[in-house]
Length: 298
Ligand code: PEP
Ligand code: MG
Figure 1 (tube, rainbow, N blue to C red):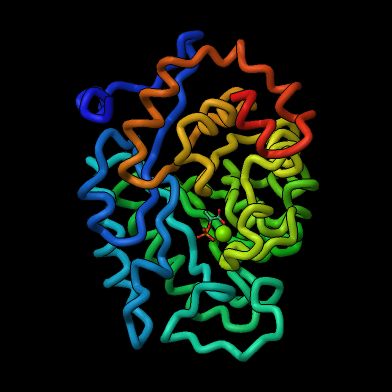
Figure 2: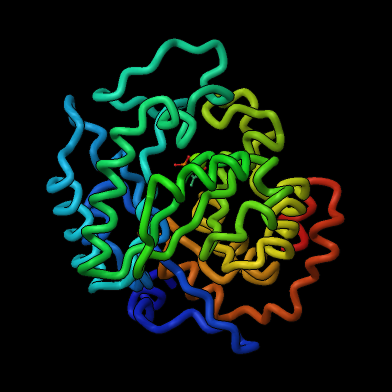
């Protein structure tokens, strides 16, 4: 089944009822883009992973070179560059952080750069320069407030040709997505963090892993709310998008772009081609008692 999916990988993921879902690949290292089969671009370039082995911050030129290599490996399809997402489980050697009692609730993602904007400014320059050569989307992680969106857009400056979005991975951002997205082209739901914050279950703690289930109906209700209220294109780039059955549900909820880990891209596309989204009982899923019942329904 896997080999059939891989042979078919380059065909679009059009469902039986005629909806085409873009399936993209998550990229941490350039090789992820080289190895990808059938991806319609990258829906998430984790820049903190791309440069995670550096002792000093990469220059603008080095960043442009890496972004260009990813875009070329994906045949010039759009790449979605996420600005530095550090803190919590992701330290960056060239940007030391103070110890925090609750790192996942502390200075993470965009929050870090309001005090130290220089590194973000360099990265945004690299993004703009890459966008002059190849289609680029840029998105900001760990956004909570409209004020943060306004600040990020101001730091970004002229947007010509760039599509601009935020990650929705904080419940507050999911609930007020309509007011956050007014100046944006898209939002991308980070189900890993959205799940951890919705269920109050640390994504790195195995003892609470059963609670941190992306198919928890509470998480799905937030995703449904985002799709209904964003007013812009909604993507999912968290791990839920890599699960073929969950991918069908996300598409049925109205998500039009999924970004998955490389080996899952052909399988997610194959599953979507077999699906009739109109026949997915989303109301029953959203009303389910728990993730186990959701799995049963799927
Ligand atoms: C997420 O939170 O779902 C996400 C895609 O970002 P990361 O896993 O890098 O925190
Ligand atoms: Mg995240």
